[in-house]
Image (cartoon, rainbow, N blue to C red; front, side, top):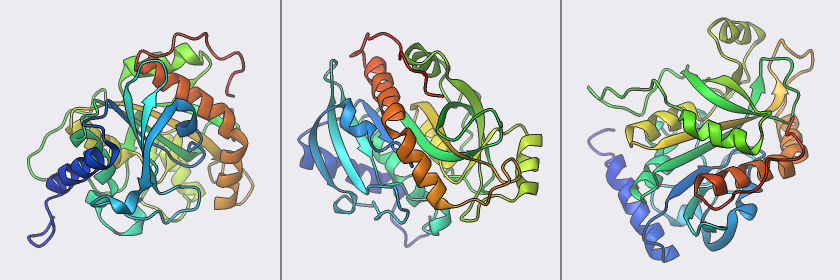
Length: 284
């Protein structure tokens, strides 16, 4: 933040106030960031009581990536009546708008009252057993962007960045879910085979261009975090095929109904509104 830039925390509070006024909802209990392939979950959560173009709310930018819807929603979660704030407008670090723009949605969610954040993404898989279309719980992360949303002597403990109890709830819905370590690169290039070998050596099993910076901002704000990646392609060097964004979109479309049901049911369980049986069809 420079002297001329707005205070990002104040901007988030302004955004939360604008959402409360526009939606008629004083506060939200949970927030979701929907990445590539995950947008359909918003329709399954419950009743949408408000929806708007994200750019009508202070600090939000239009999406620059195909597959992101660019809207904000307030949803009354089926069964529990909890309010979920669905963030369909994600700013990526490679867009060059700065880290504060990347985590603005997370800070807005915290200012809007959310205590739980669900982060989703489409990513490359390093484990060859994860075919495209496989959802994987994020157990830990490696922030390889060279950036952070934290400023100054702000020492935030990231030991359990991705809340174990939330992963347990997701496995109640789908006991077959695997876990992985997500590594965020800056992008926008896909990782090289050498970079993927490096990531694997460092302990990563998932690679992408989002999520890690958002998770850090969420923990700074005191939120519990559930992260789920959709493996949209095998990472460079794992697969002999060239990588393309079209492949990411196609994998998201193919897996969309299954992963959307998984996510919606997991959120309903988190908010106390779904005691349904586990998925009869595994998501991998």
